[in-house]
Image (cartoon, rainbow, N blue to C red):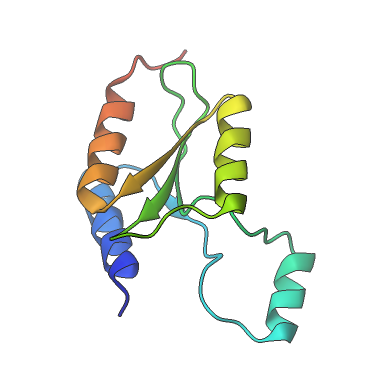
Length: 115
């Protein structure tokens, strides 16, 4: 199993234990051409961050997390999505490892709740 998958599972488990709503964007993984074709028709898009915390905090609409482990770096498409999401009123970050992601989630949720 890949390290990024294990890290993402740890983040999901943390959020479940803390009753934090979170969802993942299953864009990764290998797919055959037919499945990839149909996923694109259904709206799948390369580069979208891995995780989203759908709470409004500190003037942001949600927290989006691109998870990286080891020496992995965001792709050009991931960088473009992160830039777009930040310009559209969301907080989008790259986190290296599950501990940084959990720290980012906890810090985000400490921001003032928007009414």
